[in-house]
Length: 356
Image 1 (cartoon, rainbow, N blue to C red):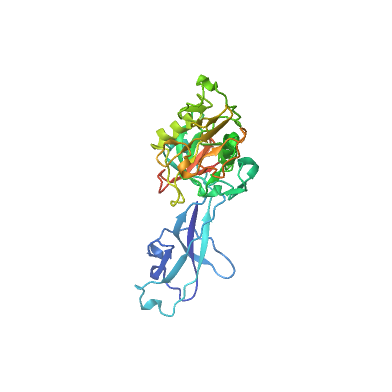
Image 2: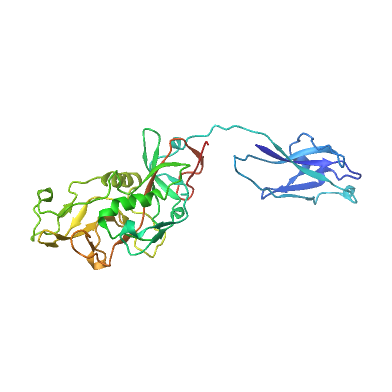
């Protein structure tokens, strides 16, 4: 806590404090002598203080700084007795430590609350050998700094999903590595001061996927009469947890998109792949991974949008139209994250801090 004091120096023909106006920052003007009196501290060889007034009070937190603008002038009410007078003063900061017990964030939040948190990385290059894409791709983690609460856990950790989507599309051509790639990308959005883990939407401990096409997958009997109902990784509902968390917490899995000119759809880290009716001697099939569109609905890449691709393990050469969708990570906050300020709304999200 600190006070900004104005200490008046003794001088010949000193102008009275009742004739001096003061103003700090954009606060209202005040007559100096109308402010609370303060202890006199300035006793030096050049001048000696005879009066002191507190013209502003505030507080400052560790590692922060603050700047104030102090103005002093002869007030319009000053009379003839101020003519040929002098006024010397010193600005003195009177500060003292004040230990404040901060509230935990968990005491403030509810499902759907907005939280401001900045990932550490400004940019991250995704290697081509991770995605199966023809070149290195770049994302910008620090652009996603607004999050929504989707789960408040018993251990007081807090799960939150990005309220926005990445501004860039991420193209993944090797479906076998889809989940592992998305999970690796999600970790780039962490801030180890506040977070303990991360995952991409739909990740729940899966590793790289290497399903083997077979006519007997899940007993469905794939064959030439397939009509688009078959799935690889049958019964894999690992993605359902995240989908339900987000949908229940904020009403929809859709989200605003930073680049509004592009379609707001994003990857889903699921082992569930859709097989249409492409089947050739039990080896070659087209596999479509899931994504979520801007209505919050499960979807698959559609050929009409030039967005399907083939498995790389079945003899096909991957299509040049590899699907590209946006990134929407989920982060888990530490249990000791503190409430710093804000109202938890999109316009005024909660601000957080932590005891180091």
